Picture 1 (cartoon, rainbow, N blue to C red):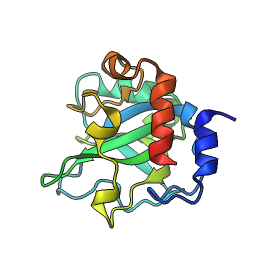
Picture 2: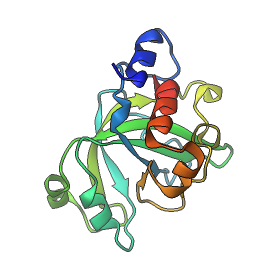
Picture 3: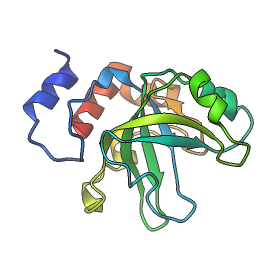
Length: 175
């Protein structure tokens, strides 16, 4: 059993978020900036187990980027409301290949998407319990655009040393 799974098993009565399962932290691959145009929590209405379209804002290379994200990978969603700091609010799984999602894409600003399944969601009823991005990630991972960033990126690895160390830490945060 991995360190992440052992920690999740030991802390199975913890209620840090609204995750209902032991998460396989080895599948954490990306982190992505998300927002809602109306200054509310993006994707708040989707509970654990729900499926939704994770949007990517139209831009140079975004369609190719979104298309090539690997099915089965987990993405951490990070967002910031105007009156708050940046938070880690969801962990979602890419459930299709890009080739399965692309035929459904539209041509509007938010027409590019990938279908995802929610594995963990923050408890939005108590903002003080939502993990803070700067505290947990400990590095500016590049939240300036719509693309998902690799957890193994240079900036994160300078802080964490290895992807396994980062995943073990995130296992404590999300399980």
